[in-house]
View 1: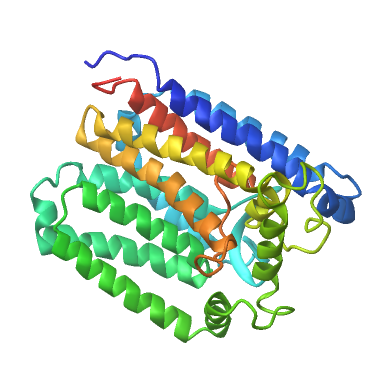
View 2: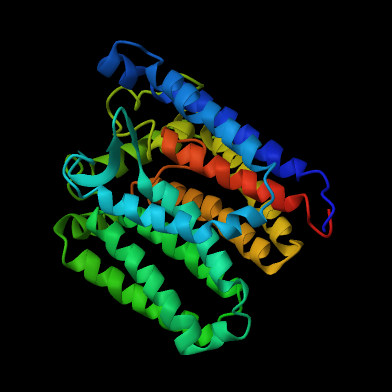
Length: 367
């Protein structure tokens, strides 16, 4: 029986700082949006606090007291449940379409985004499934083929929503776990080539994706149409300069920049807090990455190591994709910035994942 120590304090403090920073920016970025839609300047802030952050904190604190091996035992039913919820978003009476996408599930008075649950469920399932496949993971039929089948099934459901941004993050998470489990580099290269070909096909055969890709290459194209969001985001970031225009003084949040509290929130951060604020936020994510992978490196067993890699990768990859997209470094994807963007489902499952990571850190061999 392993002896529990204290959880990783730098990791915990970095997460808490991200949460506080996120609440502050939702309060600032959502003022005009809240007022115009609900007549309450702080509606989104209060909703994020009471239906996202506080339940998330309860989840994180509760989960970190549960031995991580419990999640290995329930990983398969948890994964199956997440798949069933993903399927339900297409069933009339359960689905909630937003901007033409079926990503939300309505269960009575409650609604949530099953893809956020899927991320955590898939991490735990892959970690449990790959735990005992030490050398077999290198075999094509016992390693690569079943791994590809799992990823393909999830990918199909995410493409149908459609949610290509989440698909990209899920694939990155899965590949990171597969790599750390000892997969052959040739198999990873094959997966990379197949993924690139699939991405080209997804872009080529869907007009709005092709338009986004063209705008990524040429942001000046159609500035009042498909290129509007990225142009306004770049304008916001550029207006901030080094120190920003000041917290609460953004102009872009006044119905100029779409989704100022969602996937565009980093642009408001750049405008109000400038380069200094952006570097501070990125620094917090770097600290989470360093401490998370430190926990993974010193994890007591193979399952906890793979789970720690997956959870840390989830946070880091999603932050990178969001910040890179809204900064014009990659095409727009529409995924939230972890712990910062508005969204109760996202923050609750993220904090539950952090709770598992903190529990694993209690048993790390080197503190």
